[in-house]
Length: 382
Image (cartoon, rainbow, N blue to C red):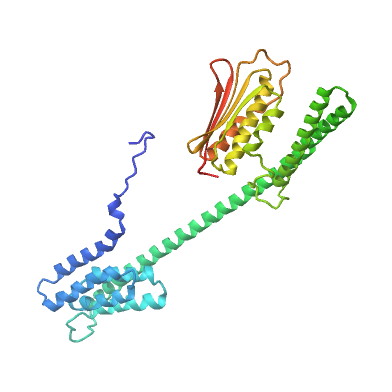
């Protein structure tokens, strides 16, 4: 008994359903039938019976020809299993009435007018009528069974086709829902985020013009440049989500950040960061360089939020056929007065990006109270 209380299902061993066995088995039992019937048969009668059994090897490719090959042995030796198998195969392979009906009729006539022919040829008696009924049933039984088997195969194929059609419809419906959701997300990003970033850019420009403090002017210029760059990337992202850029949904946004842009990113972060950038001379795939840049960018953003005064070390180096990216910060001297909100999806997205490239990403606290983000990105995928 199974854990659910139901008796275990019994399945046939694999060898019982092997194609070669299903082809060989009818030949074997037809040879046995011929051997049992041919008790006092001559050599040529045995040869015709053996031919009828061996011809079944080709019954699936030449069903009508094989049926005709079984008729001589059936006529002289009254063998049944070989012609019954041949009639069944004709019904499954050639189910048209103009083919099946003549073949079944031929089998009926051959078994009824058995060799040697009686005298008179047709005896209107009870025994003759019973023989005729038996011969008709011998042909009708395998023919009907073969038609049922063929109908079952056609129904199974039709059911499989309907199932695939329903799966296609489900995928199309899911795609339509996804497109609708992407359009809604694009509208929200444009209406909310774009408006807020535009206000930040305008305020930074006003501060840059109105203030006389050089440090404030530099900070305002940086804020304005970052705002303009963010608006440009946001515009491209909204275009991709709405499908108005002519690219596929997963097409990369342009221009794409590369490893060469890391020094500027670190300098603009406003953090006391030490950088060790030695990616080597290997031409890394664009997707790997982009993933490395985004990893450093997200790590520096998190440090800005939660430990802006901590010491930061950024290390990018080649390690064999992999690019290792490490961003570590020490323990912050104090908790920031105001913390920027975070959705908690940045590191998850970085980990998924690394996994798609065949790499890995780990992130967690260090023993000295800091935090470390480490990514290993391969050079074999792009």
